[in-house]
Length: 323
Ligand code: EAX
Image (tube, rainbow, N blue to C red; front, side):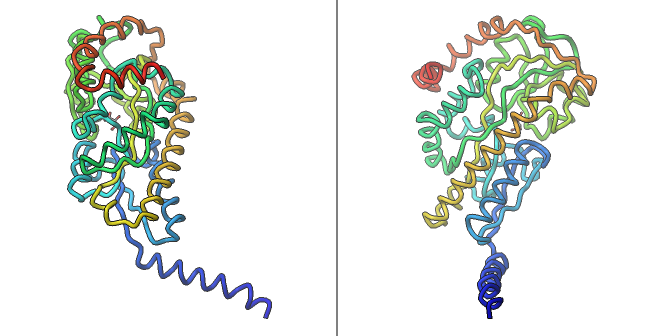
């Protein structure tokens, strides 16, 4: 009798769970990095969280390593409804939501605390609300990290060292402009093509945060790393508005909550990887240049602020700087 009393509810609830998972609605979640990356961690945590919150009604089908295309393709997929969810850098996002470009200016964020304060505060939340006008739902600010420069040609210590080097950039006008200011030849391309481009020498270098360099093993094809920290690279957990509109308000809240927990896990992964990533890269034979004339880099890219600042929100940029 006693046993029945204890067992019955357990049996019943697992029957409900089973029924729910048998008919679970599945959402794909695309990202360009591999499962061992900080995005991979965020995707796993997102999947666990949404399963828990929905009691098995919703399931995430992760699509890592650019399986659904590069970041620009994936944002287009969200708009069309062929992609449900993504974790992406802001690289291509300004092409769809122009005010997001305001976050992509070089030497804007001073450190991780500054970036988190801005993105988690009023400015970041107001920006998230703007996505829906472009058929996208901004769920939460996640993280990619401060970007640094790698190449295999020469030591980069000051902007003059970049003269004529072909540097792959993201498909982002502000980033491309900044690399032109620095004297490099910016070459925009999807991340999914980057490793091969570096391997074949189509480009001389690239720039990405340490967790991207380590998880994508760019050290196999790049011998020099300069810790420029020239721009903070936010990531965003995004959903297709088509999918969002088909959800009940309570379900929409589950997705927001799962994105928040996912973003926190990704930020933690970035911090963990950064704590020994540079040492790890040195051990892989990468020459690390820490003495950088950052002031010279910052002064050169002022031209990008002059060119694009007004267009992409001078007031917003000033507000971020003052935060
Ligand atoms: O979002 O394109 C890039 O360099 C990004 O940093 C990468 O895809 C992770």
